[in-house]
Image 1 (spheres, one colour):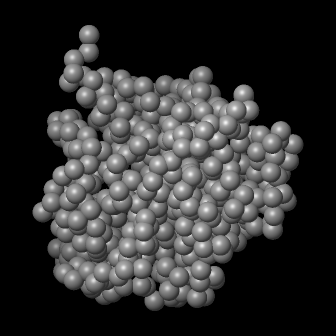
Image 2 (image 1 turned 60 degrees about the horizontal axis):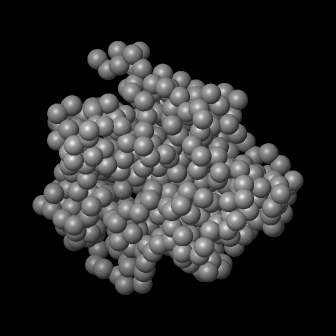
Length: 493
């Protein structure tokens, strides 16, 4: 008989598994892997470090030179050479654009973390004090500490993630935002593999859906990227959907769609015209995991910071050391291209556009990885995948091939039809696992990476039924050279 304590701990594990990068319950690491272990403006941030290139590089090292964050596994493009680098960075500040908070960050990783903690200080404080989501993560911290996972997370995180967390802690440590909490919140896709061996096994299945359409599949030949982030109902995300406008001094300006404390993106787009998002999958067994390498949610942030194209994104993915089982979806605006990457610690499968379309949910279908995930795949993942197979291809039974544009992608994200019965779920249905739009979405996003525009719905349930509000990177970065100053249309109603 499970005790109330067991039930609570199982719920904590379930929360991490479903809420961090659309996670699920993985099997424990393999024996081989275990052996390895041995617009309302607010004032600019008052006391944050100066974010000029000379002064915002973080704490000085022992030689007296100022330290700057490094990018693992390859050098970043210089800011002047990166797309958007010719534009003057927008000073760090915050604007409330209901239902969103828009936060501008600039400079070194430490400086951006400090700005983040300053500009979202009150939201972080309320989350720690009142959010059930945050309180359940806090309950896991003693277990993580007992297992030594805080030190482990430090050793496997990218240097700039550590520096950004340090900046946040210096700005928001007074309300309980600690280094442990920052790392757990931004390394959870990996840490949960250890916790799954300590806590009672929960039973969530992963969510999230993506589609990319280009060429003859779209109304104008452009490439478009749709994304549903399905976490179930999470109070903190509903309270505070945030658009992060990130302007790193050593990389490409980019935008994350996230929440206070979110340094590792689940969905984003950069000024080079590359959009990307992550979907979790269940492993077939622990042999597809490794204890050494990098978190996928952190890796996506590195790709948005460094990659100017799908080809560069693929080079980064191939050059990385992977730890868990996950998929990325990308769309490359300038090249009108896209692909799905199915990744484990041992294998990589790439599914490219086929007749202008590609889609992904939470199981693998590439020949290289089809047997690397759980068999059978989750019923919800199969259902959503099969519905996209009806909507996207030229010969789909409910095809919209040739009509895809931002409003049409929004209609796909709002689709409530069960592909097997043809029945449509009632308006207002949030999470019945029976369609694309009724799988517990917290964000619905349409990217137009060629135009550097995205539309986002968040903050009210059911999220896919809400208006998708547009954001143009040219306006967010105050850089007319990037293109359209405003999204057209401004809202996908």
